[in-house]
Length: 377
Image (cartoon, rainbow, N blue to C red):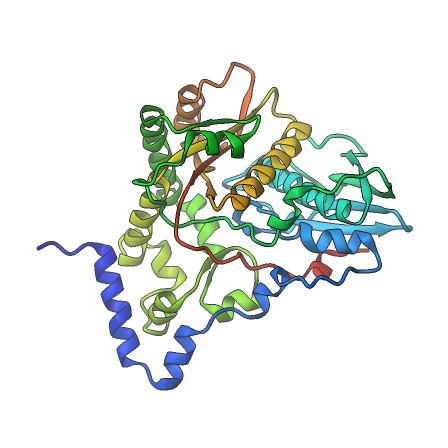
């Protein structure tokens, strides 16, 4: 009987677990600690409503979990948002489109959290002019927090701390009801049509394969992989490889960045197979397109995406972006055209977000830097 690469690496992990001492068992079974604390928000509000809103906003989904948000407080009402330019993704996101979408998710969560305090946020995107090819040192947005008795609390607030990006395979045998898919998508496009899903699946699996087998784009991800609880706590951003199996493989010397980046290694081949499985398990689709691809549309796409994610959370539905085919580097050009065609995006419009929806195993929250680390002068 043939043994799959996944079975082989699992067996190696079990062997590693059997060989470690009791202290080693503790090492492989523990979870990150400080990296997950930002999710454990208490009910006590902070005196400065801006800080209160931002401690929720940092839980926003964002590309490669880079958390690029820098915040400068001005006076008693204003906050200026900047991009931490060291958190850009120049290979997979060369024009900072995805990073800008991540600012849209951040601003929307801040808006929802501020509304809980009876505060309205006036949002001025790109107050010093729209940033063209890439983001730079100029502000992404200027926010003004205004006390307003007419502000309505948002029902999605309760879902912020429960929201997850679920990177596990979904149960394709469990159909997402059509009415529920529509409720989550609201005004955005969605589908549970098997024929369309099969077409998009072929593109998304090909796209993740292209990203992983292109050295510079996958190298960008490998550099951001945090392997084991110690690395996650030390750098609570990027892509997490944690849990008992990953800790055991790391302890046994089987899993490290060199192996992950080596196309001939078991770790690389297994990782590719697993990501293909994830990107191919699509019970339902949600996608967001915009009339143009300017920065304002990108921020709006982020706002719409995070609200869909929160609605899914409230209904116990998992969601995971399938962003690879939307990326703008030469090797992805064919998949980019194919996915726009498959989803019948009108000429001139831009597909900003594509995500799978369905039912999957419970997912841990992604690590976060504490919100104070985002405050700058």
